[in-house]
Length: 484
View 1 (spheres, rainbow, N blue to C red):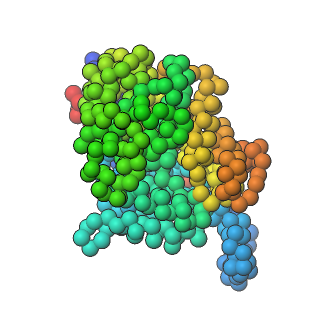
View 2 (view 1 turned 180 degrees about the vertical axis):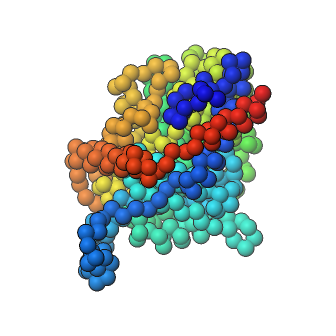
View 3 (view 1 turned 135 degrees about the vertical axis):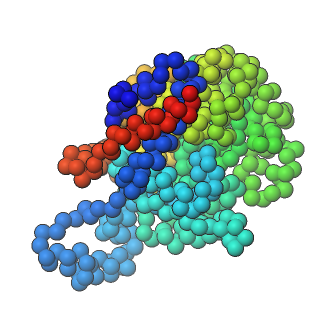
């Protein structure tokens, strides 16, 4: 096990040379899961709360609490917007979930979502300089059915404490009603990262993939596998960005979305899906196999693979086919298999493969930019602006079939996204205050650098201890044993 290093720089090299590509891909997934479990137990989670004001003597307790803080309370009482300046509200996001659709694992119970929601908070701080709190809630009624109105009421009650809300892992159809209601009725941004976030980064990846293959978004044929919150929002944003609805077809577990789908039409909870039934697939194609014939783009966000997208579908696609297989934790087809079937560009949601199309490149900057201008909502135009900001940043650094997206290591992309989103918020009339693009960019970059310097200092001084290397060794052994 001497090959393993704490920085996990190249996972592929950890496994035996005689492993096939499929074995390596499966082993990486198992290794990361086992290591996540053991290190979360080692640290007791991954988020803590720390003061950002100092104690310089005993009487400072009377400043930060009573009697001094009374002046803060009455000032906010008389001007609610002052809460953004006098508390951490202006840089604080609630990560809210009922955990009914956690990644590819389905309903994990309310507390089962804490790992993901804490992860979201971790990424917000490190990548965007944003503070966040994981709030996993029980939205089920006495019959065990998830009630969207409970989520809506919870967020409305919590709104005065936060500058924005990030909804996460809420099953459909509840996710549609929750987001659309809260976007209109809350006075702070309510962002559903599974929907708008995935839509934004997928659009960014598609923009650059089309640039690489020199195709026009308005002329390409697009087949989409999966019609949940992610893919329906991806479709909506792609259409707003110029795709031809008559050249797009979506598929759920029952077949193609089109105007003959009375099961969707007659269920008002699925109104977002019915909109797409009316807009897309005029030929009423009923199978993915048929939809992929001659298609330029395949976008799958359905269920974990690796055998969901079939190689023969890709083989039947048009010239230089673009394949996005973004189910987590395992893509619908592994990239090597998609390439063998003829895919020219392959993207997944994972960072251990080329072309990671993952929300983590989008939401930190989007929420930071929204917070800095105290936006009242995140409009679709802000999401599309973020997509072009991400795409253009990657294009400036050079595009290739295996390099269509920035990575989380490229710090400046988050500041660029924040600045562009903030300017769009001002343009859309949803910003409470106006800042220049340079101000947003510099403040975002400064906050990101401060967050990272703080983490580095805690690690350097051993307030954050390194995990025992035996944890990595055990996880690796389990992964190798499982696929041998």
